[in-house]
Length: 170
Image 1 (cartoon, rainbow, N blue to C red):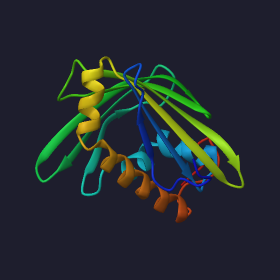
Image 2 (cartoon, one colour):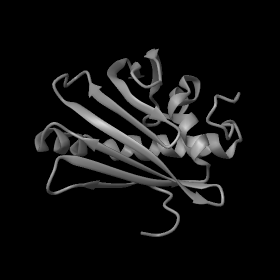
Image 3 (cartoon, one colour):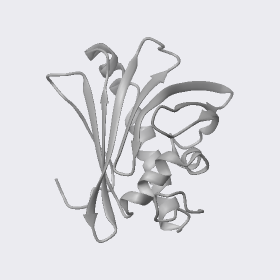
Image 4 (tube, rainbow, N blue to C red):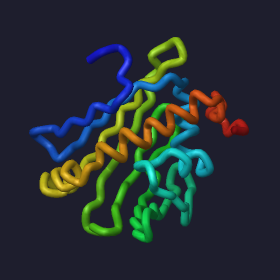
């Protein structure tokens, strides 16, 4: 693995139904944490280009819940889950696409400080079956991941995400 991953590495574990995503950012862990928990920032970068994300609810605290709807060309895609643990170096949440309400994943995100204002994001999605995991992989999820993270890169580069985890103003 090189020192600066500018696109996400997406891997499927052969032994368990897990998807692992790894991506480096020119940002501090606090900035990435804020981008993932601040509702006004989250909707600006999540998902593929051409999608508009609207939050129904967003309580990015331990025990909180969330729901958003992504729209494009008149089509709507709903997603929801619960935040099990929210802390500056780690977020654990459930994730359900409402088009497959039985397919619940447990996601863990960690923010690894690489020094020099760089952070490695590691995301792991434990799906409820190999079939569910493989359907995600076939869905083109890598496009949404890469395009979303490119939007996040642009937000970070513009200076619009403050570097503190304590809710500093954007």
